Image (cartoon, rainbow, N blue to C red; front, side, top):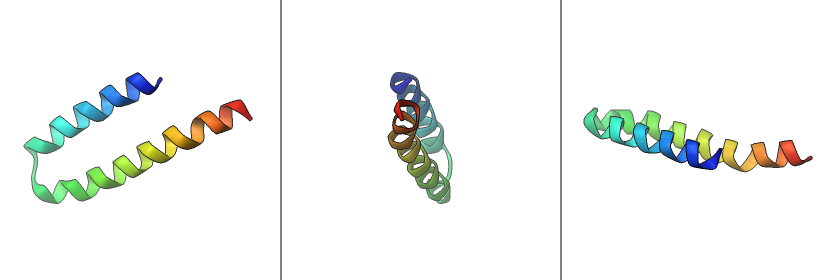
Length: 47
């Protein structure tokens, strides 16, 4: 599951590099959500 999210994140990074600098704001938000979900989801499933 972690490997898939890392691949998805890599695809997103490559896609955003082609776009405008302003899109990095949205990328940072997406990155924050991704980090939170990676930290929270395993805790929720194990609990």
